[in-house]
Length: 68
Image 1 (cartoon, one colour):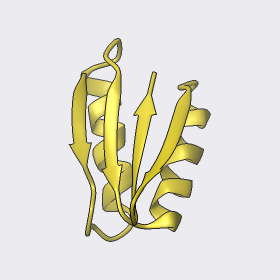
Image 2 (cartoon, helix red, strand yellow):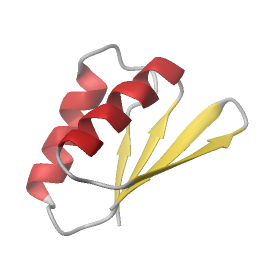
Image 3 (cartoon, helix red, strand yellow):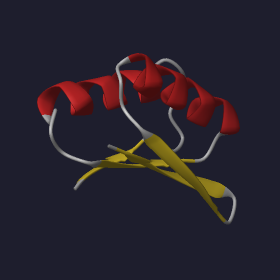
């Protein structure tokens, strides 16, 4: 599983990092760590656009996304 930490980054950087991770590791599952709700929405929108399944979990004040 590839981990991508986008906590504290401003748009569009989080989506760009997720895009790079997906392109570089097409068959790998990703675990994404984020701390902003709008960042999570943008990542989900991008992942669904490219045909990936996303599971989101709130952990305290942060989010963990699993992308398959």
